[in-house]
Length: 132
Image (tube, rainbow, N blue to C red; front, side, top):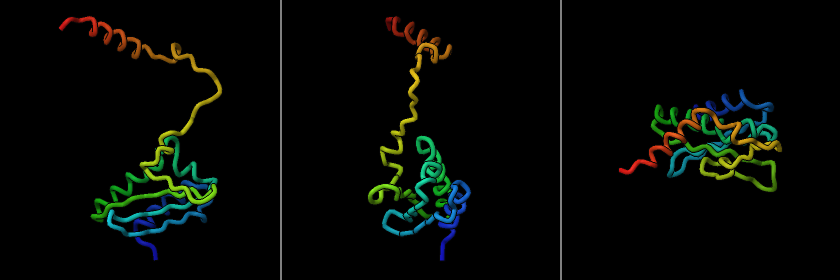
């Protein structure tokens, strides 16, 4: 029997992934609140986490809103079962923030710099010259 929070996470995640039958949400209550552990097909892990963890953060925000309604604190862990052993992706995991989205093409910083940035730097330099 699954609870409303498990059904909520399952519904959202199943809408995102390519293998909805592989979505499993386990629920554990501990001293910190309700821990929901999400396991998906390894091919769908990137979709659930999203670029720079944005999708996972959004899912956690929605859970926070559900928690205010139910007066509960929810924590979500996303389990990566693709590698040797389980690797858990939690919001405090530095791997979520250190996603490499770089390409092999060099970037010309001067061409990429906007006019607004150039103007702001010029104004800041003028402020630095003031003797106050």
